[in-house]
Length: 262
Ligand code: NAD
Image 1: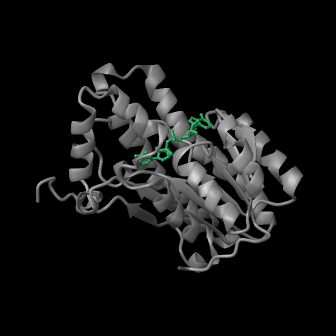
Image 2: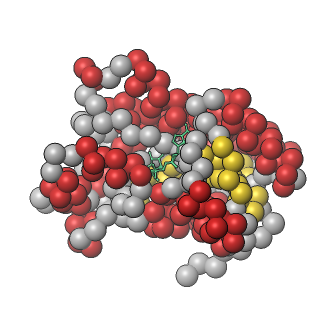
């Protein structure tokens, strides 16, 4: 296993109360980082474990620039620096365009794209003055290969991949690296649970998602939040010192575009 030591680093993970964000917060903390979680709904169930790992939870709504700025300024005031930002908070939007209201559009784009942008804006000023930093955006395989069932979500994630590349170029001179992870179907997340809850046939939907991802099919399971967290850990670590603007697909090959029954 790659040995990564994040001692002395300060990290913030948005959407860190559950799913991929929680797995990333745990892993970064276990590797020595001081981790802060910013989430719309901090969960009491995390309190004991987070406290053992030294993870601090703050309420934050990434749709609001003021809320993100306040979170980041508070963390810098408490911890004295900021080295790592994981822009992970996100929501799904499974709707055809005829059913998408202006409110739906705003909710999805503001959470999945505007939030990460303003996260970067406010993190970058502290990272630049601190000599550098690492930002990881949680995009999706929908950011690499758009999907028919969730167009607004696909738009938000494709734009997030584009933003990652653009900001990587803008801030390389500040030694700030900006990368993204593009997960496929990840089990044990609230987003997946919500999708499955809405399904007419839950088992059929699970089987369909697994069969659309060649490696998920071979392993007969979805990806886990921990598997995405491992990629996030690599990207924020010194092992990735020369890696910026890249998108790591952790989707079992789904974004290769291989037809489900190939
Ligand atoms: P999740 O629902 O378990 O976690 C998302 C977290 O974001 C929650 O804790 C939620 O409270 C928080 N959040 C939502 N809106 C917020 C806001 N406005 N401000 C602050 N926090 C907010 O789901 P997850 O799957 O772990 O999602 C994490 C990321 O992974 C998302 O960006 C999602 O798009 C992406 N993703 C998930 C999957 C999957 O299959 N689960 C696949 C690809 C990408």
